[in-house]
Image (cartoon, rainbow, N blue to C red; front, side, top):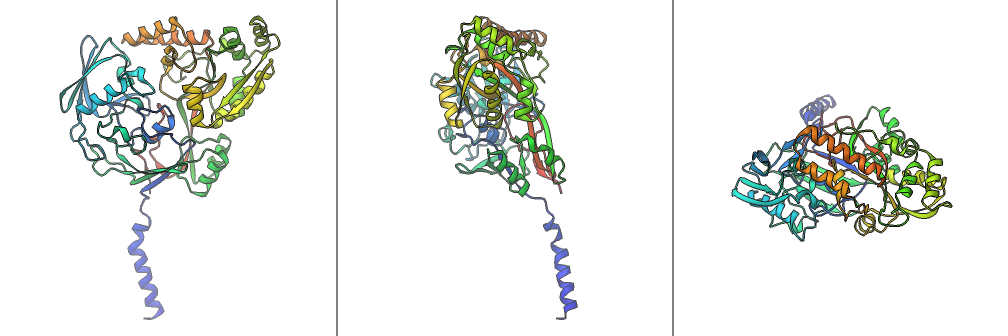
Length: 493
């Protein structure tokens, strides 16, 4: 064979295989700042659980759309009785769990009864307190009867904590989750990654990707290196805002700046001295310069807040003036509270960069008014145990990313140790109210109550800062709930 003929053969072979060479990829590698401690969203509190499992592995009766609205999920429709007490859910037919078993109304009953049961390990058990009973009408119809009208019920059923699980496999969901979503669990290498694969028998529109790998990279420098080298295809909650300008100037990438439900707070232990004293809490709030924290810890990204409520919510009111930066007022309040020389305290900081970076700034600001702060860095599992569960802390910084979760302030056992009958009364009335205008007014009252009680120092609403390769489409820009919903994610040729 001559060289000319050989060349023609090779060119022809190249042309024949060209379409395959330019086919869109079928996998994606996604960066995450934190590794989930478990993969069961119905028994764990960490947002990282939902970031892997929500809408991917597990599904609920309803779900959040990217704009925060409520959509049908496993329930194709529902009927509500005139008195607002009975919800009849009509389920999709042909839904199977990843082990092949059929999902029916019995699984709905099991999941809701388990979540509200006496021995429930659900981190948001209060979502289910108004449920009086759950009945199986037929395999595709579940009836939920409430003890009182609850205007938030369909909203509550969209939380990751309300996902539907199988009685047969629920005990193993922490390490090998089995749900009904478009992806099924494939592999978990602790400390490194979790891999999901497309579920072949999914009841709805199949996922466009065949496999997805979540890699855990908390260090901002390492996250930047992984994106620049191509080891990651996207980092939806990018931890280093100082790098965004560099990504914006690189044609290989796109930067997505959106909103989250994450109220970033300096939490104070209201059940421990000196923070039992409202004047001390108010002094702390007035010692904080929010803009300095936003600029120093998040490079200008983020919006100051004065209560535990997302600015994008229509019921939001700006209460930042109640705790405006005023160091002299802060010192005066400390004198009135009986601490003219200030006091010593500790600030426990979990790993996220907003907490670690913001904590350094907060500590410096508190020292300026006489509060001697010792910073204690803790890992996420340690924070969940010592701060969230055991309430063993003075101060901490964390972002509460659950959707419209102001109701947590009505829980006597919550880690803030805040007890207010006035606030509970507002929330109880809200639960019984379905009229939109009345609900808005009650939500405004709730915001004012906790702001005026200075339960915590409210810092800023955490923005969603995402980085992705420019051809990766379908990622959420906004986060109405902690989630990396991959159902529509695909590569564009």
